[in-house]
Image (cartoon, rainbow, N blue to C red):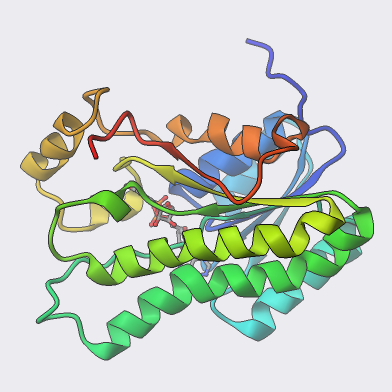
Length: 250
Ligand SMILES: NC(=O)c1ccc[n+]([C@@H]2O[C@H](COP(=O)([O-])OP(=O)(O)OC[C@H]3O[C@@H](n4cnc5c(N)ncnc54)[C@H](O)[C@@H]3O)[C@@H](O)[C@H]2O)c1
């Protein structure tokens, strides 16, 4: 199948791109013609190899997106290497599960910092180049779990709800510069992060049964939504939250 070249000439920074949903997004945007800057805490070598093998331009950067210094360096390096930054997909996130009795303050802070503060920091890092280009798309990953009735994720839900508020407010700030900001949320998706967590087979099956489409998500299930929100096609859409969650019951 020929992939539509909706992102030709765009430079897209994708965080958490070494594996899982972030890798799928990076590979899809590259296939659509974007130059991808793949950012991760661990070197995104496999993502870089996948894109390079298809002849797509890509730069892999190792950085902690919860660090003000390291995110600033990512923004500077992307602009220095490619002269522009058009798209930011804030995908990196963590989801340690634990009842409120077991979640200590350090875990609470870490989840808020990695999931929410990181999006603020990455926006600050790419904004100078994006404003200079007069066109931009920022897509922030939230989660289907914001409407969940599953216990043990109040800290995660707080971070992912915060992302929706941040996106809504930022949309107001950046509209004058031709930059849209939207949030996008996947269903419970089979990724390395989920497989390393303490999901039971029964829990995964129950999550699928709560959806209209009765299977767990795959990383590729979100890529079309991200492609739309990072393209010209979504030009008049900002401050919104788009869920590709298989029709989760609310
Ligand atoms: N998988 C799901 O079921 C699901 C559901 C809803 C939302 N999400 C969201 O989707 C995003 C991706 O999830 P996933 O399942 O692919 O996760 P994953 O754990 O498989 O991959 C996450 C990637 O982010 C990177 N990362 C983590 N902390 C980082 C940091 N401080 N700096 C840089 N990189 C960092 C990891 O190294 C990893 O490569 C997350 O924001 C998550 O909250 C996932």
